Image (cartoon, rainbow, N blue to C red):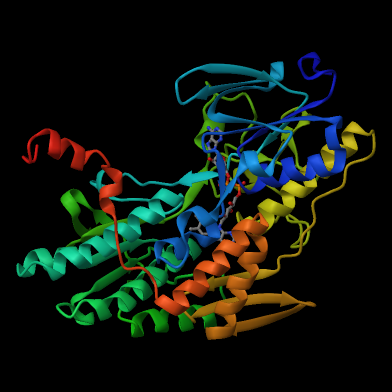
Length: 457
Ligand SMILES: Cc1cc2nc3c(=O)[nH]c(=O)nc-3n(C[C@H](O)[C@H](O)[C@H](O)COP(=O)(O)OP(=O)(O)OC[C@H]3O[C@@H](n4cnc5c(N)ncnc54)[C@H](O)[C@@H]3O)c2cc1C
């Protein structure tokens, strides 16, 4: 056992997201102070990503989708830094803090919950001009940009500038991208009541996807329903279409269309955290075969990582960075990367570590998918629920209400749940806020302006 931790087994958790937070809090509940726990994450909070589309739409205050790790995990050590080396052969991990201080941390058990990052394609202008939608600051920036563009467009008469400012382009119509475009379009329609100079026909929302459908997790009938709804709301959905170029904000698509955009949001897929597939950084075995599992850690059903010479007994992986067998769906199937599985896998990891510490046999991960649900703007939603071996198709207001209720239930901490509900109640009374503050990304600009005696630099 690790002498540094008073002879207690030390559990080191990489990533304080859905997997990391759940594993740490469950482990503490099960084993109390029998183990030492350390969580490493560059962010001091866990982001509840399913609420990000509602942050982008101004329905939820950004802070209310963040769960502060230090507050939720008393008695555990939270290290704010990024993993830069994983040496499982030496039971050691190296972490770099923001100030570039290197910390070497040894462990008895390692839990890898490093999640996924956006999968970019080598499209000219994409890296320079697009923004992702995986982090809270991205959802806030998308909202700020859209609302600031409305304000700017209403203040200019130049038709070319207006057109660019009022064009919002989203690439990727999976769950995250589809919800993001639906929610923000709904926000714009709501905000237009305060812009007598702008008309709904001035606004152009474009959703582009290479696949022949949006929301792949839904049934064919439901996909058609969502597509219809988006098109009725004026969203231009381009299917089987590729983004060819985004240089200088000029969008060129494979159907020959060319237009300037005031915002480009990239949601076209994710890949496992690249830290894991860099052999100079990590010695953990990753899947190298081309396909959807490439770059992930191969997890056994009990969530231990599997290597060429069999399982690594003290290394566990779960969530978006792991290929976890989906025993409920049958042989050869893997769990889809979502919070529903990540949280439950985190619980299983915690229990299996407790079992290992107590010398009891581990248990395999088994979870029957509850289904999927999406909000598509205020009072609009769609979902597919698995109840008692039956698949329920829910749409419209009931789906929207159920999705909101489920996510409040799943959002960590009572305080945050209450704050989200209070925010929704406030919006019902006073409507959503329509202020965008893009200046928050340059907070010193006003001070510099004053220092330059009122001259813009
Ligand atoms: C917009 C959006 C909407 C979604 N909606 C839904 C939904 O409705 N339902 C659903 O089930 N799922 C949804 N998901 C997916 C869900 O959020 C993820 O599948 C889930 O969060 C995965 O959990 P995880 O712990 O594997 O990764 P994460 O929760 O992403 O956690 C990974 C953690 O690792 C940290 N990290 C990264 N690099 C390092 C490093 N080098 N060192 C240390 N730490 C690091 C990150 O900061 C992060 O905190 C949505 C995702 C998005 C982006």
